Image (cartoon, rainbow, N blue to C red; front, side, top):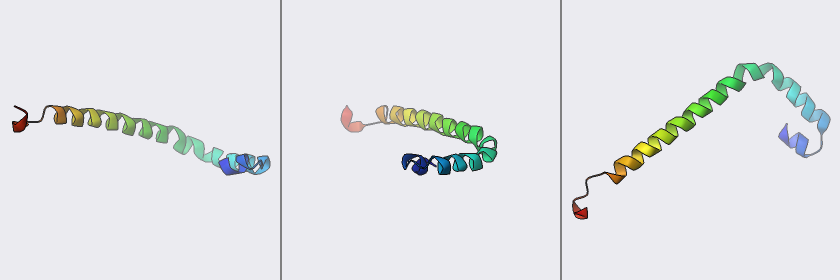
Length: 62
């Protein structure tokens, strides 16, 4: 659909959007929620990893 729009094929892009519309409710909101949850978990785990790294026991650090 994006390629059709970029190429200036408006009728083809409109047809692609119309075909997707019946699946939008099935996938749209659910996938957005999954992406948001994954982003949140990634952020939490990155912060935890950084915290563990900064407080790790380092005998050479004195």
